[in-house]
Length: 209
Image 1 (cartoon, one colour):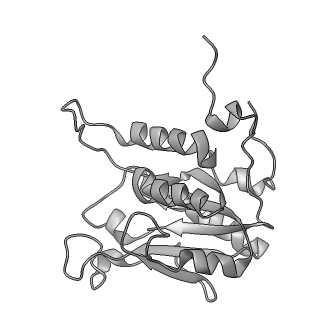
Image 2 (spheres, rainbow, N blue to C red):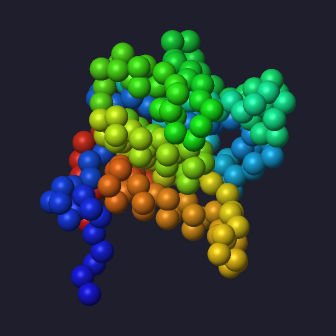
Image 3 (cartoon, rainbow, N blue to C red):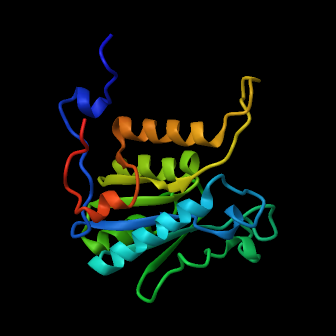
């Protein structure tokens, strides 16, 4: 049996890594709810270190940075905008001049100013990182294609959590869910790279087969 291919490969295309001179960095939901709140994620410490490295690279290159944060209902169980769980985590906080977009749905484009802010940058290439891989990272990356953006998702700068199997089997472990979510995105919606080092190398190149 032939090796599996993505839809991009079947169509004759090749995944291409974003480069900082052409890209904007979009970081999604890097908030305390995922560290000290009710929705802890597996491996988030290592992922945050990768987010910090992406921020360093983007800032050094003068690339636009957009921080997307989730706000739930005031007084609600998660992401209460009036409580500590909605705060951006120390070490990956915005600097002066960086844009903050507030959302209330998994898709960061839905009902927000994200597309408007990206259009101001004049850039159609995105580097996407954040949380959680299967939820808001996935929803946003899928919508980015609909909005005409080419996305590069940095795997090590994302994380997720175990989920119950809706068909009644054993719990789906975070590492499996993370990998499957990335595979889904790589099929059509994005180029997926392993870590921030792939961006430091300059981007623009196809991922080796």
